[in-house]
Amino acid sequence: KRMRIVQIFTVLAAAGLWSGLRMHPAIAWLVAANVFGFILYGCDKFFAKRGWRRVSEADLLLYTLLGGTVGTWLGLRAFRPKTRKPSFLRSFGIIAFSQIGLVAVWLGWMFFR
Image (cartoon, rainbow, N blue to C red):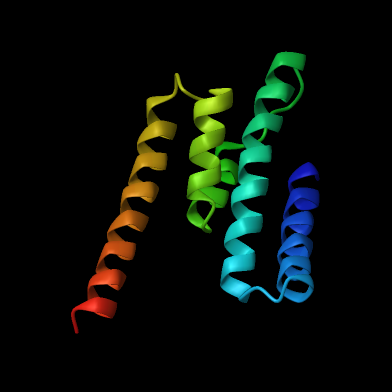
């Protein structure tokens, strides 16, 4: 239920940035996904300290996959929520390096075609 609320806020924030600041929709989405990805990692750590039900790894990785890589990486560094789980860190790394590769290919295509 909490994850649905975060997802709704992400969509609303992206829509607000797009309409209010006349930002390109893709940029608005990336800003919102990074901000809420960072917040989500902080919430996971907060929930863990309280002994509450934590945010699932799938939900944390979903924000990374959907464009919040910088925000989630900063959240991972700042809050250190899952640093003892090699499988989580491996999945995070695969997503991040895949995105870096895609951006490099796209930039190469844009500037060297």
